[in-house]
Length: 312
Ligand code: NDP
Image 1 (cartoon, rainbow, N blue to C red):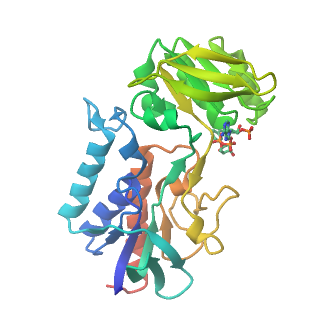
Image 2 (spheres, rainbow, N blue to C red; image 1 turned 180 degrees about the horizontal axis):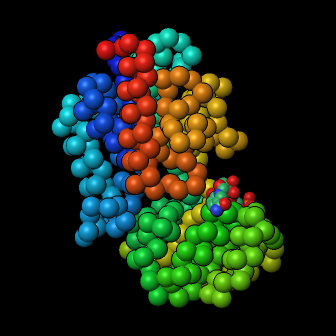
């Protein structure tokens, strides 16, 4: 097992982690990054990204993450494979275990472990992830302009995604598994007031139809067992996200879902020297560009901590 001390440890490798790495490396903090289970994060699951500034023609998500990585490496970030499995953030220095591969102690830790969209778990859903199944309307809705789409979920996210899609698409059908929404009253009202949104209650997805691309959604009414098919080319899941913060429970302040709490306007957690950037601390915006922004902030916060504590 590697035992090593570093000035700045970055956990996670999405846009937040890579941006933190670029800034930390240029500030000569010699950052070490452990890339986690899915190097590049959620963007490696998307196709075209058209809303990240600087790419006027758009770019494929996985390619964009390779460019972020190359930029972080150019300034000397040491990027390694491995998943942080245990954290002892109240110790000085902070100590992190990377599976059974490494024990890293660090003066500063930047947590950019992201969040994972929840999926239904259907085989047909998994198969079509690059052909019309998405967990992000803001990312992918544009590709379904003037088409018919289905949204699954009944929380605020589902309402927000349905309303976003309703502006672009011909018809939006929402599948709600219970008899009622979970979303706030105002979001529900806005959703049902939107002319081209149809809500089907007590309805669950049976199968995403189509071979290479989505052609329709087979559903079932869980009260009557009646089945049917909705013709659609896009299938959007909005059944919640899970921030990847389990290993920090009991040490870092987080909300009831697991999103890390930071001092507003900073990336500071409740433990000095530990910073949170990107989706692991953001349930509202969840965009690559906002993650990159907080990644930058986290490296600047860490740099100031090192300076204030005389660590060179
Ligand atoms: P929520 O956990 O609030 O809602 C998830 C929804 O998905 C629920 O309606 C749930 O159904 C449904 N669901 C879960 N699993 C399945 C499944 N297997 N099949 C079908 N439906 C399923 O998540 P959100 O992402 O919507 O919101 C997370 C938090 O973020 C909330 O606190 C929310 O208020 C907040 N938020 C606020 C926004 C705003 O104010 N503008 C925008 C977005 C989020 P069921 O109800 O049956 O359990």
